[in-house]
Length: 91
Image (cartoon, rainbow, N blue to C red):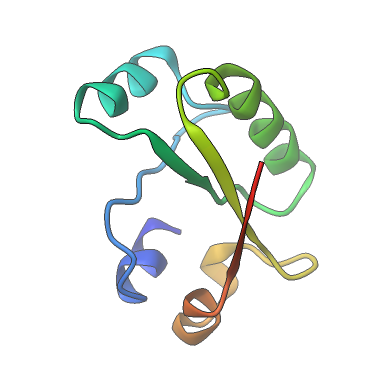
C-alpha cells in the first residue's frame, strides 16, 4: 500500500505493521511534527477493526481523516490513477 501511494505521488505514508498504530509509532509521528493522519486500512473486517482501534488511540493527538475506498478494494489493488482520485473524509 505504501508503495502504491508513493507511485501515485502521495509521499510521507507509513505502514502500521500490526493490528493498530502502536504507542511508539504514535510518539515518533508526534516528535516529527505530524498532527494530521489520513487512514487507509484494508477494506475488510481486520482493517475495520484496526481503523477503529487507531481512531480510539489517536483521536486526542491527531486530526484524523480516511480515504474512501471502493467496495472490497484495498489500496494495493487500485491503479495509480484510482489512488490519485480517492476521496478523503474527516473522522
